[in-house]
Length: 283
Image 1: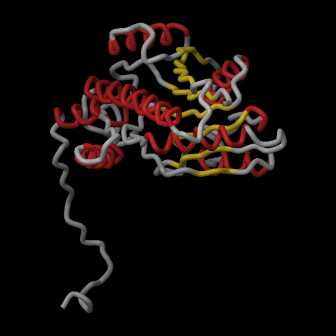
Image 2 (image 1 turned 90 degrees about the vertical axis):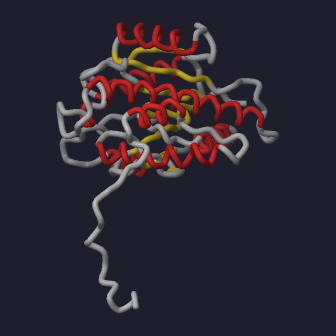
Image 3 (image 1 turned 120 degrees about the horizontal axis):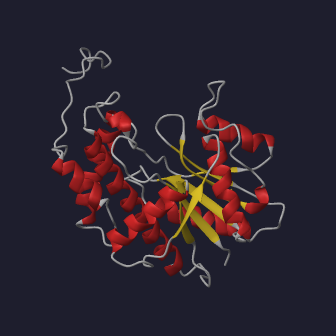
């Protein structure tokens, strides 16, 4: 069994500093505290989803699980890491369960923060990293489980075999990215690219230049805008209904609670008048 790290990137939830595009500070309408509570709900739901996936991965008869995958949570700066650790203690009432390792990242750009966190993982002798943000309330455990299996399989191949794992998002970016240590990749030039290259093609280009095969999993929707929030809200409510009859299925309980408190559990949109002509087929 190879030692795989799941790396979650998260700020400390603070009003006015997280998910500001959902708020009246920018192009949304929620107040900053509402957006903060939504983000906190997403953070814990993503964390729980990852542990559910790890348990499923460990229970699989196909896996030799002497070493369980570990969850790292990286916050920007030492003070935010300390605050985030306390937030987890308060949420789970126990200091060490579910297990987690909270670290901090630093740098002059998002790329540098990402690279800093990855280097900490590699220095602890992990064989592969699967990384993601914490604003994906409808992340499926099956997606994470499939990624863990793929990384484990690649790590068992000869040393010249590598992989980049990508889960695209809905806006030309990625929600999940990871690779084995031997791939020898980094995130330089990927985020906030000055030439206008978005994150998904930037990673694709990096894989091509380094001759690293790409393995794509399902699209995973994140939440940045109000439209994203509506999409995820409708998905989460459907997953809640699914969980009533599908054994072992989980749904983002905290996120669902928040959207119900915001009265977003019955979303309606304006009628669509831009559809293709139907006068010759609707008779």
